[in-house]
Structure formats: structure tokens, C-alpha cells
Length: 163
Image (cartoon, rainbow, N blue to C red; front, side, top):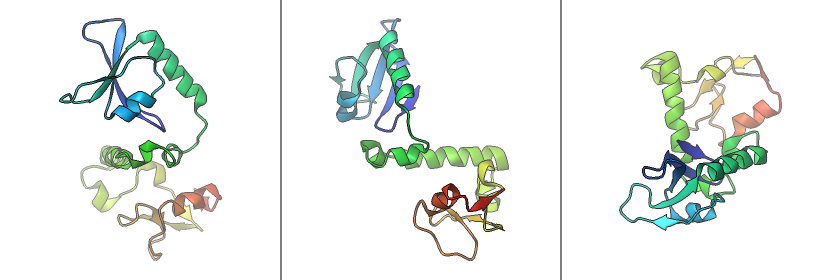
């Protein structure tokens, strides 16, 4: 299982030799050391995931519950701006999953014919339909220049959209 929090990325799998434990795997030492799941960090230079912790299922479950209870943000990507996750390839993962969703919803030529996901199909600004811009990765009116990253979302939050 891959887990992205606003400060970390980790992979959780069942431990091969200890059925009541999980192997928590990290892409770098810093995240492993900063992660509050109890466990000793081990480093294996040539492994797919360089840093690992062996943890009890109970400790991992408690950590997950704590993460859910700590969740305060209403926009995940924005919550990463002041963390090490902001510099991670997080947006690449988002883009890949967005493309997969779009392909599933609209077929192989989705980005040529209808680049928006189903969520944005009825998205309007001032009553005019918007287009998804491949240059700035935002939605705006076709005749408008590219907006700075995030500007479109600010418009949504300010209520300047209609369905």
C-alpha cells in the first residue's frame, strides 16, 4: 500500500518473516527518521526502498488513526507546500492518476478531445465554459491568457463558478 501524507511517502507491506508485522519502506532516510511510526530505521543501499522500519500491525494502525485525526486541510496538494513532499514528485503522481481517470472516463483520445476529468465537465467562469490548458494546467476561458498556477482554484473558492 502506498501512502502519501502531507509530509511523507511510504510503502507498507506485510513482513515476509513476521506475519504480525509490517515492513514500512521509504525512499529516503529523512522521511524514515521523521516518520512517527515507532520502529528502528534500517538502511539498505541497494534496495528498491533505501530506508525501512519493521513495525507491529497495531503500531501502524494507531499511526494511521492518528494521521486521520490530525487531518485538517481541505486541499491535499496545498497542504504540502511547506513540507518536504512539495519537492517530491507528488505532482507527477497526481498528473499520472488524472490522466488515467480521464482515459477511463473519455477513452484513449481524451487529452486531444476532452482533457478535463468528469469533475470539471460543467465548470464555468462568469457563465462561460472553460477549457483545460496544457500550458498552465489550469482551466480558464479559451480567450484568456494562462493564469498563474492555482489562480483557477482561487476563483472556485471565491464562488465565481456556476454549474
